Image 1 (tube, protein in one colour):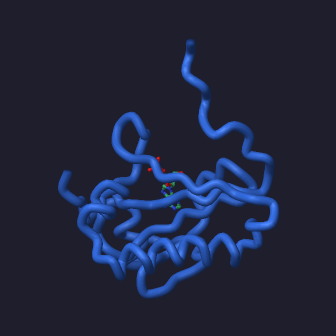
Image 2: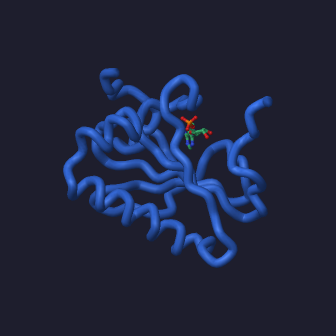
Length: 122
Ligand code: AMP
């Protein structure tokens, strides 16, 4: 799938629309989700143009990958959620219900998050 430079996170990266920024470095930008699902819900996105975790893991440089995942860990520590715990998650494609086609991870925290996913029907 080709990267669409008009996706909403690309516009945030270019400063064309605002975000509630919590962290930024050379490799990543983190901001609060506009529709939070948990008391703490932050998105971390790489600065490069990658559609998804699949695209990122296949095509990003080692520097981009290490810089991005170090930033995710830094954001969690900065948010103060490591002690109680948190979840990070990335939706990919149709079955994953990915809505925004710029790779991002969600950081969910601030409450007991329960089971990881709804178990499949047996
Ligand atoms: P996903 O299904 O993983 O693609 O989730 C996309 C997330 O982006 C959703 O949780 C949305 O609430 C969030 N979102 C969409 N637009 C914005 C925005 N302008 N600022 C912050 N979060 C957004």
